[in-house]
Amino acid sequence: QVQLVESGGGLVQAGGSLRLSCAASGRTFSVTNMGWFRQAPGKEREFVAAIRWGVGDTNYADSVKARFTISRDNAKNTVYLQMNSLKPEDTAVYYCAQTKPWGTNYDYWGQGTQVTVSS
Image (cartoon, rainbow, N blue to C red; front, side):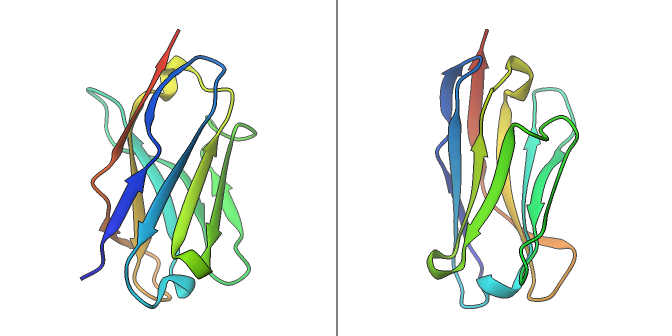
């Protein structure tokens, strides 16, 4: 059973930075796509960023481009989300997600970590 454990959330002032981490279990991390999603109170879950296996190309939601950076360390089975220039509208529960090996759908999800940005 795949387990994803997020960490690094917290309270930060607007303009500040946080780095989220997501540690994954299993032996096939290097051939899975990883993503970050978020859900703000009263809103639907939305895509934030993703990184593919292999070359590691990335893509981002327009709302976070140039502020957030997703990266992965396959040796540590970990994906990161570096968040800079945080805004109050970035406040949400952030979820890590993983596909099956060579898959495209996000089949596994973490429990989430709260990020709160104060104005």
